[in-house]
Image (tube, rainbow, N blue to C red; front, top):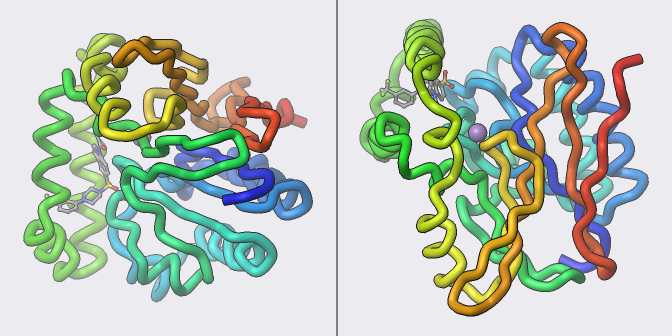
Length: 253
Ligand code: OKV
Ligand code: MN
């Protein structure tokens, strides 16, 4: 992709995130005006129980965001990727929006060189419980079964899964929730890129690591949250011929 590419991740939109949605919508307007392409690489939504929910019975907050995606996609190329929460998001939705579905891992040719882009949860291999959950829910037969259930039943299962996950995350250490260096090494050695971009771990930073005698950098995107207490987290990466640059969102009004 040539020109200025903006990448954001982990916005975690849901029915109870109006302030985050507002900040994100302002970001979308800014992207239309200043970027040549926009990529959202996963966990745009805090939960996703099937594209049919969004297309047949979207609550107002979701209908609003989807209409905005549609308007963005009319102006600039819009790529949506799946995260560990909205992994059921599919081509049905992106096609409806005029957007494109991003592959789980993709090597982007940018003005700043080749960049390996993904959501990032696949690198958290020390979290064995999560990886087991991931293997199960990513199985096509399991997804087919889940999607054949009624929407109210899917919603109940999703609520239950979220409750259980919240309870178990309380006991997980910080290092288990971060990426495993050997998984990063493996990803880097499978492609030519010296730069990687991902989200998921909510540790916005540039990490440096030597792989195969070459210096590599890993840019981790921040998550977004304007709805819990006084927090105002958010931001994105701008990529152009001058390199990769973190840009912050505005503080709360
Ligand atoms: C997404 C996560 C809930 C993590 C369930 C099959 C199965 C899909 C699903 C249900 C849950 C997505 C779709 C959600 C991510 C959680 C809790 C933890 C760590 C099945 C296919 F197995 F039940 F048949 N789900 N939802 N979690 O609420 O969006 O990522 S979700
Ligand atoms: Mn995530």
